[in-house]
Image (tube, rainbow, N blue to C red):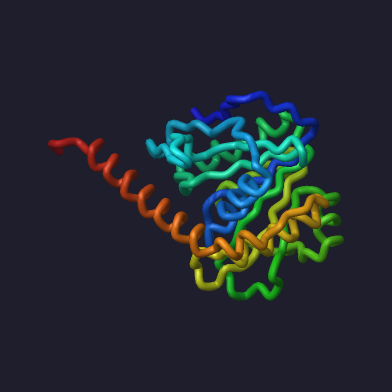
Length: 240
């Protein structure tokens, strides 16, 4: 079973949900973490799934679920992000739960942030949208809307489900050719998000504190992989 669990009241009216899952360049996760810190957001929920690895992350002496939701009352926004790659078996369930929860919460839109490992895309930032209204909004702020292509993972399925259900969802993406952790890419998508929502987002700290954040993310990825492998080894039968 996969579900979004709320741990604090969400008292927002038709908020925007900003989503950042690990992917190419860790762009979505970096951008989401930056927003949470910059806006001093409040933890309000998490995603729970039987398919998730048994991982808890520790920040500022607090043990936390690795896939969490935060809110900003000031900007009427929610931020959903994960500190581990969503397992393949859980991707569809997570995407469906996000859409259903979003409809129940009367979200005004879901905006995904991320990167793709393509070297053929000429534009710095490009987008995908599930409705004509959001396509126009992306174009109005100078984002090229993808005409033909493929996108994968939770973001891809959220967009596809949103299109079928006529739910407003969009992705703001940038290319990441060398596949490394990409702080500049995260800054680029945040700048366009700022234009789209008409909300101030400073990326100065993101670039200044880039090395510290990059090291933290690399350590987190390494530890997550090690914990998952250790757990799987323990679960393996002693005799075959």
